[in-house]
Image 1 (cartoon, rainbow, N blue to C red):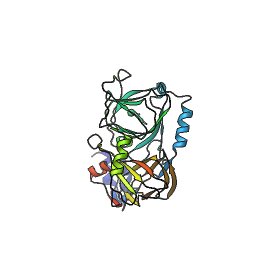
Image 2 (cartoon, rainbow, N blue to C red):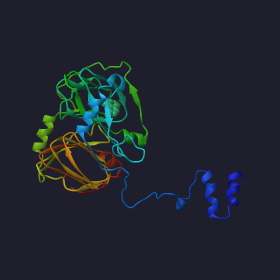
Image 3 (spheres, rainbow, N blue to C red):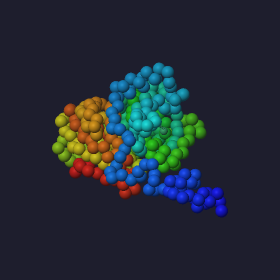
Image 4 (spheres, helix red, strand yellow):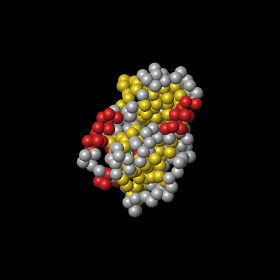
Length: 322
Ligand code: GTQ
Ligand code: FE2
């Protein structure tokens, strides 16, 4: 008989059994350290707010010493201060401010995580190149770089350009299908410069769609048509009239809001904050939240609702109109 079987047979009580089990990497389900099930969602992630004024000043300052040659990307990750996390913004998504200076080239690479950019400040001449297609980055635009697409960014304008990156890297960390590759030639040949593209959502089109959307007590919403390219994330704009509110809502999705224009306040769980243009709000899973506009405002939201829906885990309370 093996020594471990012998030790099991020799045990004369449950307490004597546990260390023998433990040596075999077995734990008695009735004797585990932590509960494995609980009544309603719990998250360690905190509701949070980041200021664009601060993020932009930090990127300007960093830009004195770090270039895209060395950094590949000059980005500032907005991490949630939970445990030793220094990357994830919410459980499945990371948000970052990125800046690129005139004449700089952020060299191409590709990765399994899906990425998107919401442009905060860019003059004509700033571009993302996605699989050889050159797409302009103008203020208020959203650009997709779906999983495994080559992407690089460059700035031929005379001013620094700023945007917010949102990626599902934390989801890829959880599920572990990470692949990353630098482009073999260090630059992408430009094969097309289209006037419209399914990866490019221009602010003028967004504004028109929002204006035509149903109005629910001063709130109009417009979802971007990304489902064919993005399996994990949903993207939508909210237009709030002055003094309008989203109403209180909670769901099992994690959400990131970027302020495109305007200003206001929000209640995110126990956190009360004031927001303005360019700021980022993080709403972890099951945190009740309400966003109120002081002046007419446009918010851009990215959430992981499609991931939860595909898995059958999406639940929500509140908000009749999505
Ligand atoms: O622009 O390719 O903020 O790959 C994080 C990872 C930006 C990018 C980020 C990235 C990028
Ligand atoms: Fe990237």
